[in-house]
Length: 202
Image 1: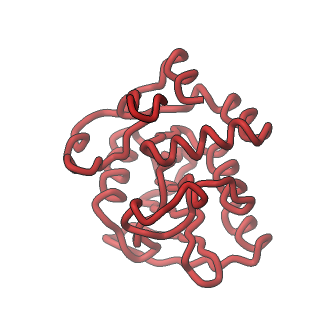
Image 2: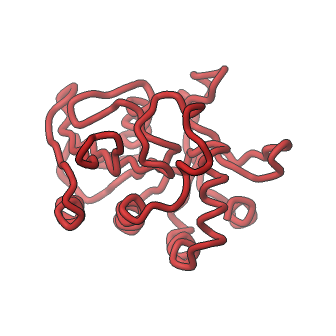
């Protein structure tokens, strides 16, 4: 599987386990301060729901959290066999306030996992919030490959909605559990990102 091959290529720590009867795979750096991908799989099959979010929490191959549970539910409602999670920043921290702009810069290892995950996914659900969007905007300016990859997978992009951050003057996609209203999107279906919305984000 590509996850194992990529983890081995970079000398990373890959762990497996079970949480709530769902098989898990997580890939970390050697100090386990960064998580590059998390898989939650409930059945065999190649239909993958990819959640592309801001940065990892403490969820792992043997643990979950409310955001991951919400993503599992979304993936199952969309008929997928497994959930993959990647993030704009690979730094593990449950509080995004602790992360600076530098933490969202393009990282070679993290980008490799993101690229592979997007190309292998059936549905790509983007939900990286304002900080994540600012990182993506920088990637698009500095990395031609990033621009090309996002262009190729445009038809697979979904979100809850596309919003405008007035202060930052950018379009962005909200986090699944936005601060101040954690349950806002609990029962909201994902929808395909329209072409005009794509250009607001990329």
